[in-house]
Length: 171
Image (cartoon, rainbow, N blue to C red):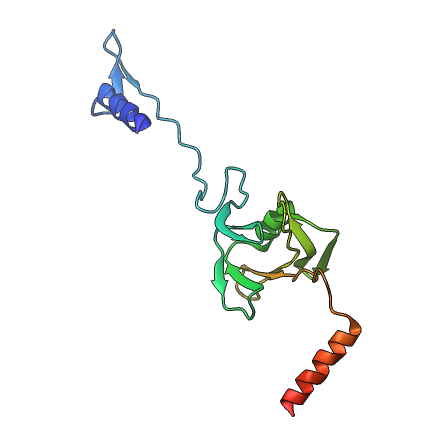
């Protein structure tokens, strides 16, 4: 708002023809205002061109802006699509996930058993895949929450008993 007021004040001072008169009566061209810095799409990117986080969080991992949720099967599987280039999406997740294994399948990257940085307590491991969308130029993000191992797993005898019981119910 202030820069707009200053610009308006400058235009009024210059007069209608875009020039100013000096004391000796000669006309001098006025300086053109400096062009403003290019506007970055602040809806998705920061000043350096990196994706910004959204308000959507899965197991402590903030997803980037610009993702659209797609249907997925299961409570622990999440699928998203975006028009954001693959490199930008992979860079976003690469800075936020801690893992010892990243599988590369062509241009796709899958972060295996990853943990979001900064998560405390109740850590859920994630498999996060970022894949190119063929003929679309965007990216597909698949996040699968890996179920924690049970604290007290059933014994082999208990598993056999449960299996036999289930078979009797089906017969």
